[in-house]
Image 1 (cartoon, rainbow, N blue to C red):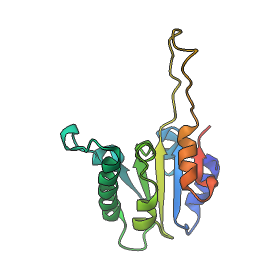
Image 2 (cartoon, helix red, strand yellow):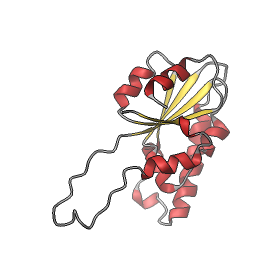
Image 3 (cartoon, rainbow, N blue to C red):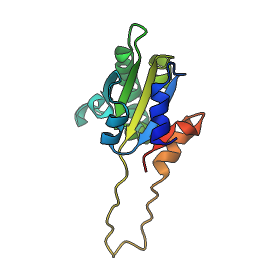
Length: 159
């Protein structure tokens, strides 16, 4: 999906349980969604201080999934108003294996859409001493989200 296709989708009168992954600059997404009713959820805001955060990765995922369920339920509109939920720092969902279920369970509908925001990956300078031994795969995040989406055209990568 291109940014223009996302803009066209946002302008449609009804949505069909849309969950979109936006990989690109936030300022461009702001332009595309300008004038639309939006709610914001930052995944980082759901994570507690280190001493309250479980050390086991599975416990962390369960803990965050529970907080995410509560947060998304609280953001769902009560009437037929069209609302776009923007989820910042969505890469953490992929990192912890949370998946997209909370958005489909608690927010998805014909008048609601979720946009998972992933900042574009910036080039990382690698020192000459490790450049031959380190391999960086910049597509891992996109591929992780694609596996969760039934239709890969829901992945919008800004060029």
